[in-house]
Amino acid sequence: MTGRLLSLPVVGNLPADYQTCEDFTMPENVAVAVAFHSGYGHTARQARAVAAGAGSVPGAQAELCDVAVVNDQLWETLASADAIVFGTPTYMGSQSAVFQAFAEASAPIWMEQGWAGKLAAGFTNSAGVNGDKLNVLVSLSVFAAQHGMNWVSLGLPPGGEYSTTGTPEDLNRLGGFLGAMAQSPSDMGPGDSPSGADLRTAEHLGRRLAETALEQVAGRTALALVR
Ligand SMILES: Cc1cc2nc3c(=O)[nH]c(=O)nc-3n(C[C@H](O)[C@H](O)[C@H](O)COP(=O)(O)O)c2cc1C
Image (tube, rainbow, N blue to C red):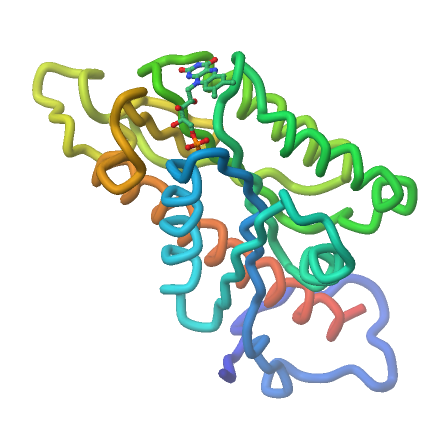
């Protein structure tokens, strides 16, 4: 993929090996990792929707990482990702213990700020319409901030019952802003939940993160030309 930069702010003296805008090459692709846990399969469906959304963006590749399996391959995949989406079911108003074990296992990376500058986003699924999901998204965003990552929000207006014209089929029917929320009734299996609207909301988050990652990588590439 090639591209041109039409205008770049140029500050200070240009280096001798300064490259012109014509030399600018858009990055071939960006990698989006979806690092998730799911105890019973519902959040895994949401994770697959996030990955599908990210992977639908030209130039973006998405990889699903089940954080129940913490091994070298997981850390290598996350290290090479431009963006990481964190996902967990809401258990007792918080992230699952398995997800938290993964979060704590990332402490050596935190020590070196190995994920600093990567983009991050989050999603969660619970049985309750509210279910204290916001607490989980706040916790995921704090986790990302501790790693020096840049949080990307959902970027959708609230749908559903936010207004009398809303419907259950609306994107962001649960009305969150920090990340993607989904709801799965406690007596419904993962084959039938989360709802289509919640899965499309998850796809939106993946798409938005991948598009933002492309912008960030392209911006860094362009900045490197003028620095
Ligand atoms: C230990 C445990 C705690 C839970 N706590 C909550 C909760 O605080 N709020 C809620 O709405 N649902 C809660 N649930 C329901 C789950 O969030 C819901 O079943 C979800 O779909 C499970 O996702 P999973 O299939 O990916 O594990 C809890 C379920 C379990 C097993």
